Length: 179
Image (cartoon, rainbow, N blue to C red; front, side):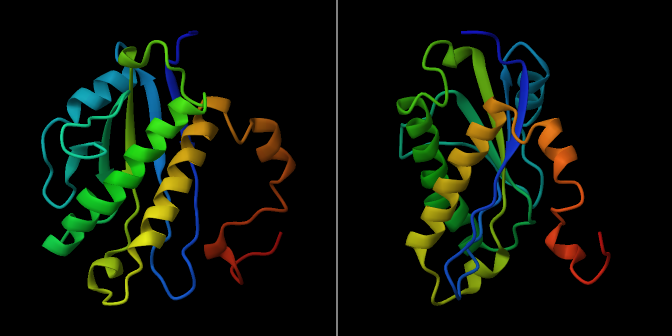
C-alpha cells in the first residue's frame, strides 16, 4: 500500500422530501504516524456540546481503520445523542466496512491509518416526531462512502475546481452574487 499521509473529502446526500436528514460528512484520512494521527489522538477527550466517539457498527464492533466521529452542530438533547450514537454511527460504520469490501479503502495496512469524520446531524431531527430513521441511515451511509472515495481519489481535482469556478455556486449565494 502506498502511504496515505493526509487526505480529505466531503459529500452531501440530500434528505427525502419533508425530512431534515441531509448528510454532509467531512473526512480526514491519514497515517497514524502523521498529522492525521496527531489530530486523532488529540480528539480522545470530550468537548462540551460536541461528543466525540469511535465509530462502531454495534457493540464490540469497532471499525478499521480506527475512526473518530464528532458533530458539526452543538448537541443539546439526549434525543440528539441517541440519533448520533445510534442510526448515524451505525450508517457510518457500515459505510466504512463496505468501503473496505469494495476496495475503496485498502484492506492492507488499515491499522496504520485513522479517520476523523465530522458529521452534520440537523438538530431538528431530534425533535421531529415523523423522523424517517431509514432515510437518516441512507443519507449518512451514502454520503460517508462518497466522502471517503473522494478523499482517496483527491476529488474534486484542482483542474475541476478551476473549470467549474463560474458554473458551480454555493447554494447560500443564490440571489447574492451573479457569476
